Length: 254
Image (cartoon, rainbow, N blue to C red; front, side, top):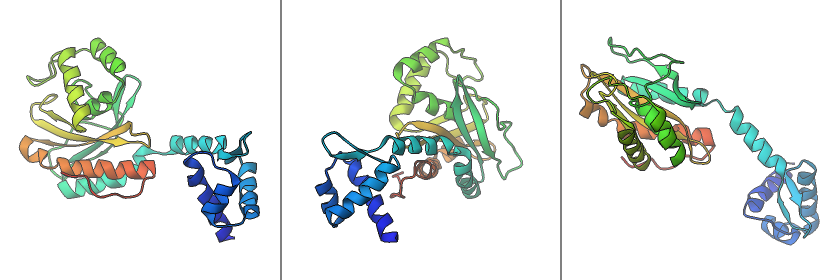
């Protein structure tokens, strides 16, 4: 029975390459056409394979529906949390996870610093869109017309002297973030707090969440915090792989 299941499952990646006729399926599996036909009929009955008018087979609509349902049921917070805890244990600083919901970027998880100085951020609280590193990553991934429209309707509070001053500067920063694949907030929201962030991506490569490490100047300087960027990016990549179901790969370069 396990061999039958293995053969049936082997058909799916073949058809992902494009429609194939019975002969090609049989050849790829190394079985007689009657065996291949029996497997294809079973997959067809379950909606995983569809037979076209030209007698070739392609992936069925139900397979795509199941894939979409599986993606929608994934809990990014549940997947990310062990990685956030591991990062916190390595660096000792506060770690956040945030997502973009409608016109807000909201923290959905947080692991507190091991130091007495704590961040005032909390789960469920929106972040400052124009300065927060996680917000820059999530908004930078929007299509250009959406980025521009959003930037033009935002206010630009002068939290500190380093805060983003206006839409033109914000769009330029989002373009840079989109190009480099990471973001910072170096005293833009609070003079004494610095942050580095990296994106978590889904199966289509789009940014589904952003994670960050934050620390006050009394604990580490901005330059010292930036040395953690490779570790932050590796953690985000590990979450991305698990979320999208991709096999482990070599670590991203620093």
